[in-house]
Image (cartoon, chains in turn blue, green):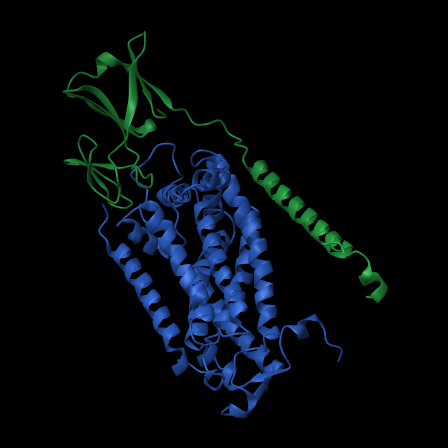
Length: 345
Length: 148
């Protein structure tokens, strides 16, 4: 059979023990799956959503209450986006905890990290498109963080917002970034990321003579498992979307109302908690950038995992990276929990 | 390279290197110019700036002891011992509107506290609420300026 484009996506065979779910957790595959769901559901939402301050809220209400399956499509979009952040984070942790970030894969690790940042930006811009009282303070505080950056902050703020404060211009710009700019970047870097997995030698495994088993599975078996995983993913996503609605609040008013929710979106709660203890720039911009830099530096500054220890969880020679990642995760989770449990002002 | 050529006067920058440098510089310059052009393109502000001057009505309607919230300006006007004063209710930390408490104001976003006179009680904000310009025009109207 002449190989088609699709044959390039998977190698003819891959090592059996590294293609087990308990090793990969299917997290990379599920990230791709969720991205596809997001693209389709997002395209559907675009047929009704109107990105103006007057129409944003009402058009979302129309999608939710009048459009056939509208609520389902919106909920699918919402839940895929939230779950993507979690699944992508699990994927990153899997790579760190199995030592799969070593050269030659360390550049691809950086591509993955930038995909994670893009997903967060997409999540935040999408959240703002609701343009309701639930996003008011997150929009104000989040964009004022840009303003707080020394030297370039005020100029950058005006480029992001198209105005001196949140308003119709900001909504247009967030919309454009959300449905086009960031999506193009995500797809471009995403395809590069997947290409590099194969280019870097596929999934990380010990050299052939040091493998516990020479067993391999064929690409057909891999596709069968991926299909099964996608089927389970679809079922879970449909179930969640059918029963748990995406948040919706009264449309944003000109004047501050009591309905305004003072919480950041859940994936930025840890930043909000940091901000309670200090200066806007240092806590809200600098510290998150340091976290990102530390994550990015792991494959470059920490000792490499020994080749014979690759392809399994928690290799001994990867301890420093594992401890570092664990500390970061616990810190972010702790801050998130503290913010979530804080009594409302 | 033939020996006869290398005996000729060697320029400090060979022609090939010069051409490479030239086209790379041109590419870099056009890239930088395009980027700057795109930033300029995005710098336009398509909507008029929001109003910053608010006519609050007759100044006489704010007798001593008045505490008036001006929601459309996110401000509060007090008539105390020092006369009429206006504070911005926009938190100087990250811009959320502070909420009135028994003995002052608190920011719902990050918990900064201010006393009834707008002075800072507790961070993360590093300064008190901003004092706004308040003046009486010829018709006796109180004009609040949130930009000044």
